[in-house]
Amino acid sequence: MDEESWLRVLKSCSDNLKSKSGPADENLKLGGLVALAVTFALCVAVADAQQPKKVARICYLGASNASTEAIFVKPFRERLREIGYVEEQNLTIEYRFPEGKVDRLPVLAAELVRLNCDVIVTTGAEAAAVAKKVIKTIPVVMAFGADAERRGIIASLAHPGGNITGLTSINTELNGKRLELLKEIIPKLSQVGYLWSPTNPDADYAVKETETVARYLRLGIQSLEVREPDDIERAFQAATKKRAGALMLEGSGLFAAQQTRILELAAKSRLPAIYPNTRYVEAGGLMTYGEDRSEMFRRAAEIVDQILKGTKPADIPVDRPKKFDFVINLKAAKQIGLTIPPEVLARASRIIK
Image (cartoon, rainbow, N blue to C red; front, side, top):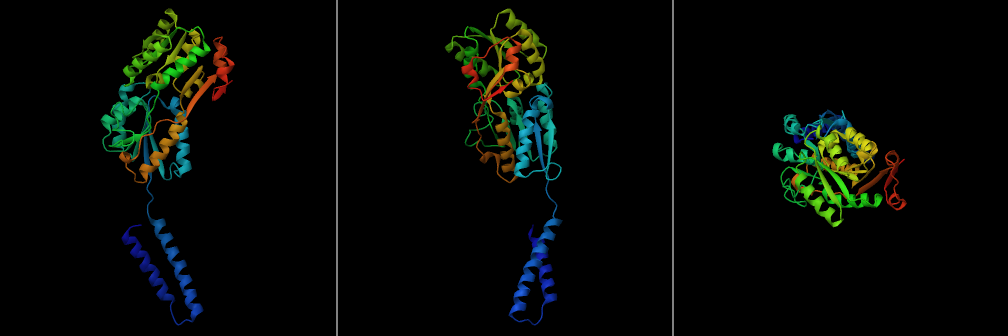
């Protein structure tokens, strides 16, 4: 309540008390004090009720499309409700998705800027990179995205500076573990098809690092570049022709938007595949080892709350993921005739049957 409103409340309460005053003994004086307290409380309640409540506007810049990102939007909204935000009461959320067309992200980001959002949440490396270029003043919270410090999106994890904070991914760093898991379920594995897209601004770094760790594991990497959706089927044909024994998928908004098609081609090619996050496996993919994205989105909601309450993004350290998922889909394994060793199953955080 502002100063002028408080003065009006105090004057109203004072006038009310004067109208009730007169000769009184100690008991009447005590009663008068009680009456004053009750009257003052009622006056404050009425005044507060007359103040317009601010509705926070959160804007969401996705990496792929609404259907594939629903699995992540859900924990984000749930955490906001737990904190005290109720949609259509004190919160609205505006969504924008590129629908697999990553080149649309700058246009979508500009749309959100014009909406005067209080906070913009981004998902994926592509959206975070666009936010750095397009969104200059509105606070931005990354729900996930490739190494933000190395790519210059933030100054440092501890002191991000500027208007961007949130969570940064370590997806590429996990590729070594993914290759190890493929070797465990396929002991004779010698070559892995690596599906990646240059639409991901971290692609060159990811390919280089993956090839390095593959040499250490004595595995050959077949680089399968995908620039647009029509390249996906050709990439699978190339993997089959060169006898790749398994497939690994890099994170990309393009791939997320083409999830169904990729899963169908993997099953048709009978290629054991490991994916960057759980949504592929829940939709029918074989397995994933990656960051617990649900936990990251819940944390993103908490950071949004901090910003809405006045904390500057520059003062909120950027988090790295602390929880990881290893999920296996036994139905998918059976579909391609693959038996997962018991010792591997025992380490899974979740098994889909």
